[in-house]
Picture (cartoon, rainbow, N blue to C red):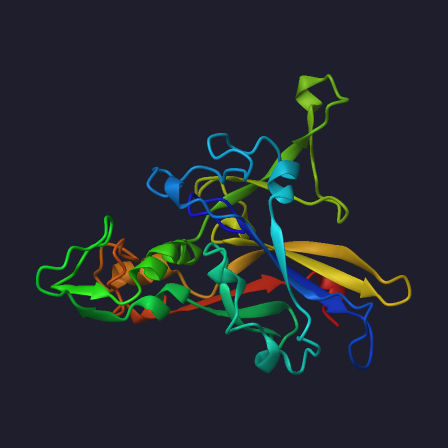
Length: 285
């Protein structure tokens, strides 16, 4: 899930160590979505996601946050070779959670060091426009531009979080509190082992880790054991953008990478989202 207030998002990739076609025991491509509460979008900065039981109280724990996720499975994806044709491009999970990337293709780099992601800006699919009729009263929150308005302004508004995915987030790995250690100088420890998921905090560019200075997603790599039919996390990495979209916008002479109203089809460089995840060294063969 993604949030435009700078929280790092997550993507999961699974490596299936089995030959031949798909079996019922093999993992199914699954997207995890978070309920959307559009009433909080006018708050600046955007607050943390709220739970489904109470719209007025923030989530008190990560476990509570995860319990609110709902999953969408895509069992028709049965082959890595056929992934470009079987990937859920026409029925993407982003239509339910606009903080997710609209991924079109996934493949390893030629040197075997990265997993490359090709995604698109879903909001641009709803940028078709029409003239405002004489005497027409537009709904609250809908803004016309040069007497034109979006054909599907509801969907265009819903897809505004897509712009956040093009903005990098500098992060620094944090230490995980050890409740059994009373020594304040040694009260925290770094979760650096493969079995422990790393934690990050927002940081300045000067304070960010080298691999966390220009990132957006946490990448989890998993391995499937066909004998035990278990899925195990074998490593983590942070995503890397192929280009700095904000800097590119600046060099083009624009003040903003995206517009609130969505009349920005002319900013063609904001159409395709390109990023990659570093593959753990032990799994590059």
